[in-house]
Length: 164
Picture 1 (cartoon, rainbow, N blue to C red):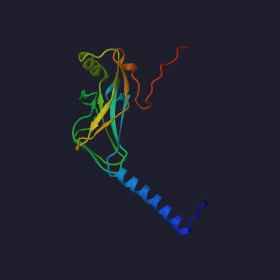
Picture 2: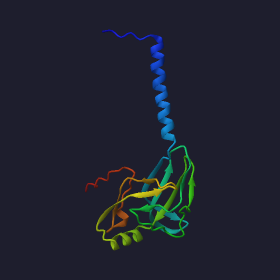
Picture 3: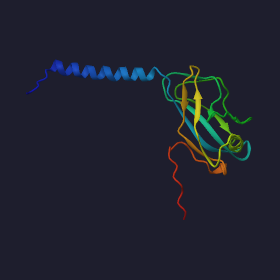
Picture 4: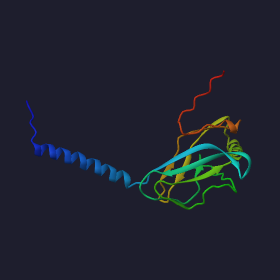
């Protein structure tokens, strides 16, 4: 059985595919899209000697402004560091921009130990927008015994270094 498509049929198929793609992109853009990252940073200079911090950052990768009304958290713990360049909340984050907050790893380790954590903990950064939608990061491996040995959540996997 041979199927012969007329030019009108081809135009109709093309139109259906384009309409589906447009509808998909409009639906995707109608919802806020935020990428949350947790990473280890070293602040140098203005704040004195080199200081290690854990940064939780939300990047608006969508096309709508997102409003965060409260501080982000790491595994439901909010331990902001005073007098650091953390952003204030509530905060509107326009498309293409970001907001961030810093955590002191030693204070965070103490809080986690007091709540029963041992050795390594997988932390997840969480931002909640004004509508209650929660945006989460990939897990961040946090070593309670050695806060300077923490790893970034950017790669998602954290292989152990090979001894030389």
